[in-house]
Length: 207
Length: 85
Image (cartoon, rainbow over all chains, first blue to last red; front, side, top):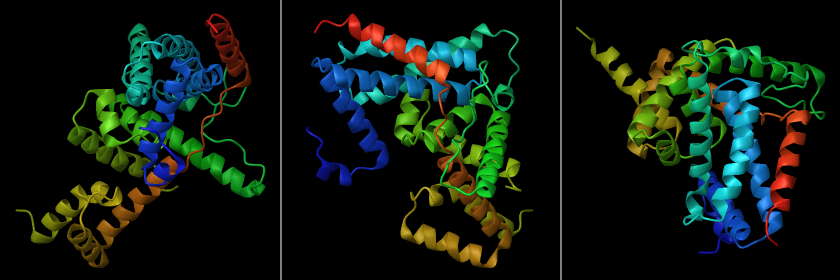
């Protein structure tokens, strides 16, 4: 099926994103270099963002990103179901994060490094928010404060809850996609998301 | 023993995420909205969860540090060079 602009008007954001990935995958698999480059760029962004938010270690995020690039490049030429690429990418990245976590034998049960990670090793910003030059300085400060609070609240969640919040609320995946990626039932994903939201609300009461 | 009011609150609270995600039918939505009009504590939870969801969804995309982005671009460039035309 070809996805047209008219079709995409009727798609949910999650369906539209899946269709966009599938379209890039088909083009890349057919030899389109520009599509392959766009796909790899998207893969590295997803891998870095997800890994940093869920695992919290900038150095691990960099490794996970490199793995995602290589795996995506290899996978595209063999892919049989382009529509499934988006969930495959998140599954691959999640598995790489889990491997990293297992290697960190002294990792505490819930990681605090997301809240520690205000800057990376090079001193670059690695916060949830980008400064918006168009917003007044006082509102930018409020945004930064809220982002910091959200980052701390996320870091307080157990990994099994955090991953659901990141995938559903921040990455915009559907319940079904999150269930596929995590191996949980859709009912379980919904239940965990509800509990995670209640926990976040408790942490963010004054925001 | 749980009072009828507390029991109704528990039922409402259990369905709030589904309500906020637009997964409930009109009848169920009406029931939650009617309850919240007379129950400030449930109304506060609904509003709090709505704000929390908004905060998560509104969090801007994580910027990738320039040094990391450069490494990724170098890797992409190297991969594309190995690809048959």
